[in-house]
Image (tube, rainbow, N blue to C red; front, side, top):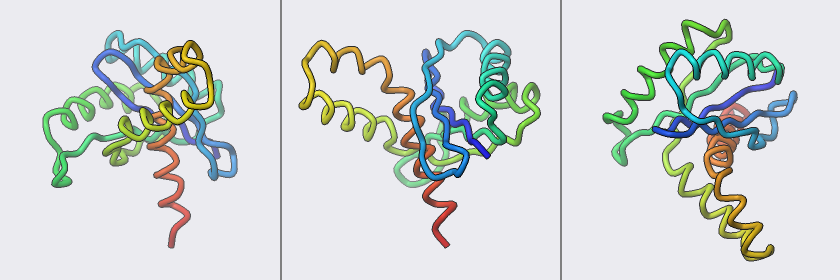
Length: 143
């Protein structure tokens, strides 16, 4: 089964998808946030096209592991997705995924020209979603 993962931001939504064996995550795309209903319809359609059987939504937690205002916003946003999409939706701690995605981009920049590195910046949200998804996949395999 393939798993679609969401890194929800105020302006952009990063998406990542797993392979069918649920071993590897890859960035998929970045959507511009429109409205809860429009986002939910678009993501539901993408999940269908990609053959996803589950959706994982990154949940930003505070350093103490508690859910703060941003996590509550993500949960409210996800309510529309849960109502619209027939797939199971699960939340997963996304702590530090954006920081890790930016570090990955910096490492890629070292091996490529500056113009190529700048073009990767827009993909940070999708890379962050892939970081979240890989964490989720790795945790599922660990007994």
